[in-house]
Image 1: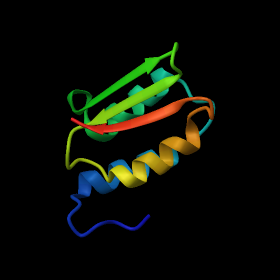
Image 2: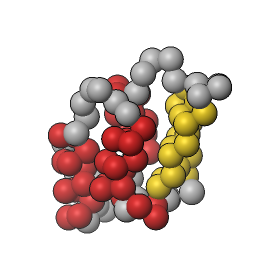
Image 3: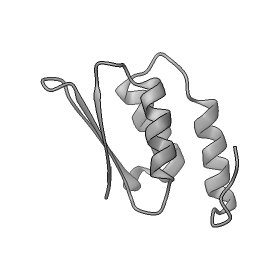
Image 4: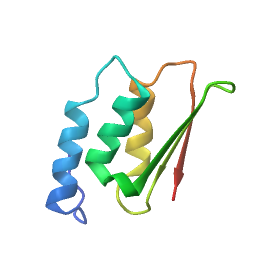
Length: 88
């Protein structure tokens, strides 16, 4: 894990926690809890539409590297889900 120069110590700690928790089995509850741990309950939204098999994750701007988050989420969510990653 390579920290960005602009990251705070808390952001670096959250990144470590995230990497340690990249595990399977994946559940919506697990994802909501780990994202809340990383960025705070009020800074994230997670929606799952079972009809369209879409998982939408919204994170408040500037709290996380969205490119890395997308890569990590694609590793843990089921392959039949479409991921939509958005900035709040």
